[in-house]
Length: 232
Image 1 (tube, helix red, strand yellow):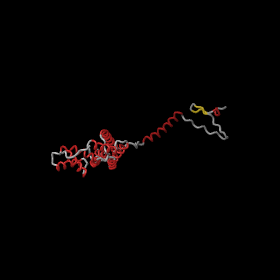
Image 2 (cartoon, helix red, strand yellow; image 1 turned 90 degrees about the vertical axis):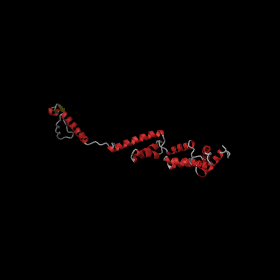
Image 3 (cartoon, helix red, strand yellow; image 1 turned 120 degrees about the vertical axis):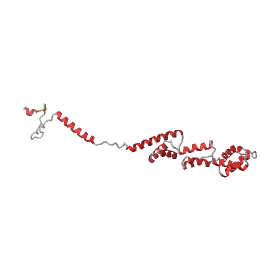
Image 4 (cartoon, helix red, strand yellow; image 1 turned 90 degrees about the horizontal axis):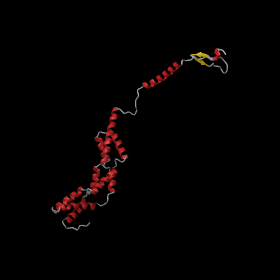
């Protein structure tokens, strides 16, 4: 077999002869590239593509602007302080919003924080109303009207106030009389009208107003002077 049939030597490599399958002249043997040149060319093309892509400025869609980042940090700090405060004292939603606004938290951040704390139960107007009603009954001996005013002052929602008052026991008379009996002994040194006026005023400030206050005040003063029969 001749050297042309056996193959040609290109750069130290022997290439197998190309034999046409369906006749005709054999195509010219392609010029072999130096292996190292091919590697360099391929690498260069890859680096060119990479460098083109890399040359464009990279922007993060998640990174906030300078001002936005400061606002987010301020909101996070305010939320952390509010959460710590809620661990020691219950607040209404309105009180929480007022606190955040005083710390210059943006309105949309205020809404987000209050919604999040409400979802996890850290803010709960219904529960706060129950706590305030319990304190009003057991420690302050307040009447229905004073309880409603106390809840409203704390910013409890109207709906939560209505629910709390609906669950109150209907014993304003007993609680008002108990309060009046506790105050009457210190008032009997005054004439009846003065004692009655002062006791009715005290009852009114506790939420026992109108005819109820007048009735129990008279009864308590009569009992304190020994002119009435006291039943328990």
